[in-house]
Length: 450
Ligand code: PHE
Image 1: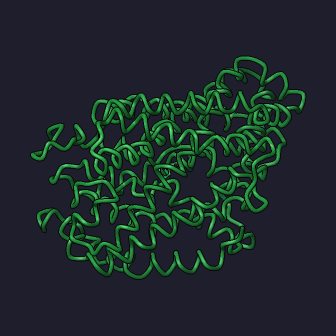
Image 2 (image 1 turned 90 degrees about the vertical axis):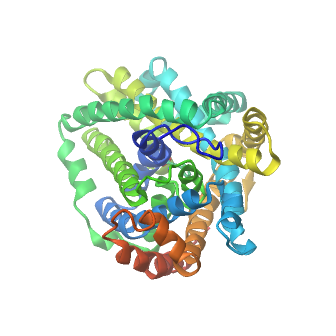
């Protein structure tokens, strides 16, 4: 495959490069920070089970649909729907995705991305001695309440993201993911080994793997749905954008299966690194968002040996995962600037990056106490809105579009005009027309609560 097509549009350098970049987008804070804390909050293995079912029957088909739209259109989400002949109203999916993903999601994502840098540094400094005294919560609160600190690290993280995206698709994003993703896997395996060999680890393993279905509520389903979409980077036009840089000869269903499997594998492994250690140290898994930043430092501090090293490694892992995802979010707003306003890549990255940083500042500051929206910290409000409203809504509309309006076009794309086999085509059609939209609508209506 060449690095640009006949129209001069950039393309991925290789199939592996694309899968690693798509997996790089999918695998992120969602897998390592958010998935484990949701498992902890929702009572363990029952949540894992629902999450897996939703990913197979809803997430994966939606991912295929997004890849198909992107590759057929060869355009970023806002213009993609027009490019494949859809009536203008469908462009709302692209607009909503670009605003919610390229701007809003990235605005809070880079805040947490910044924390990972701070924690990486502090792992080697003062974090663990404080955590050993039971003060990791105080450490976290002091950090997020210091406006200069949080904003400094948020800006640093964003600047690194912008630097990679400046390099473009093949030389920037793809090259970065090819190095970072294998490193991430190795680090995770080391952490799992450490966690499972701690005395008392079995309690954590059974919390994580033995489902207790009585713990399921409507909210569990919405959390699992939102998490599945968030983790697979769906509903925001990311996979439309990435699909648009894909060559015509690629087989979309298998790329989607690879991407979704890698993403799910890493989430499951992250849980396996975290829960056994948390239980072995006699700590609580239901901490919520603080699991990685408050509970884990206490776990590392209590480790019999090598706590500092493992703490550094864990936050490095979190940083790697975060940056390959933030690149993909940044690429959406960048592609938007390039296509809609005909800007050069450099200008698009600088202008959009600045807007996103400014949007993120209230989120960065809000965990220190202010600002709030309707009773929630600004950060929590933006996160909730993106994950539990925009992602499901974007995916729901994408299902309606692909399932009921553009099905023949999608069929052609998924089978490369009938040239490549896709044995699950009929099952996919059912999922995208009926199962996914009905499930999303039901879960959305029953689980939504501010
Ligand atoms: N999938 C990423 C993660 O798991 C986050 C993300 C969401 C990235 C939506 C792009 C779009 O962290």
